[in-house]
Amino acid sequence: MSAVQAGGRTDGLPDYLVRLLGAAADLPLRHRMPQATATARRSAVLILFGESAAGPDVLLIEKSAHLRSHAGQPAFPGGGVDAGDDFPVGTALREAHEEAGIDPDGVRVLATLQELYLPPSDRLVVPVVAWWDDPRDVSVGDPHEVARVARVPLAELTDPANRFRVRHQLGFVGPAFAVADMLVWGFTAGLLEAILEAAGLARPWDERDVRPLPESLMRPYTLPGSGDDDDRDAAAAPTVADPAPDGPPARTVPPR
Image (cartoon, rainbow, N blue to C red; front, side, top):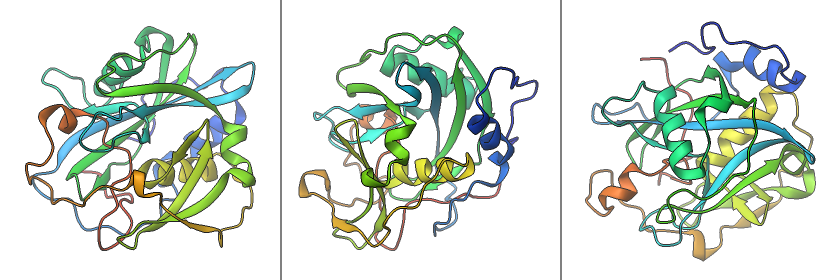
């Protein structure tokens, strides 16, 4: 899979985003994971950067508390491929429109990153990086899936006071961000951490600060295909925490 979209324009982009695009083919995602299975479902997420009065930001959603999995957890907008999608870009844009009211016509797609495998949900996820040429107010699309949409300032994500690590009861320890009244952890936090490093925005923080993951955010671990998720959950954004019992949830895999 190509890292940078053919014909993608970089005019008018901030320096940090140009740096990210330059490193897109080799993001610093240093996590263990097994090889993707033959049954892995294809999904895509939209990593949408923009600029507001508060400075540069990135779009996150908070999953609805009514979902059977990932309830109340932050994520990038995204989900599984639908028939007729121009995957992965079409999938990411469609999901962002459905979940956060993002008008695809105001979004400039810049790059597709390497596939990432999430073992517990048996998904191959393609992150799609984009710039918001025409920012608009964000709003919740489907309240069954999404409780809140937030444009999170990059300054909050890079503030050392907002960074620490969390320990899951299964033994998984990984990065976390306390931003916009949300605890971002798991796969979403790992991807954010890699993006900030590649964009040259990361600042030193106390990696010895390890906190237990709140019980309210834990869910029982289920094997992929166990039938414990309903169909709507299966189609929802796959990028919130999916800690595997034997290690962190994701790293880059060779292009397929």
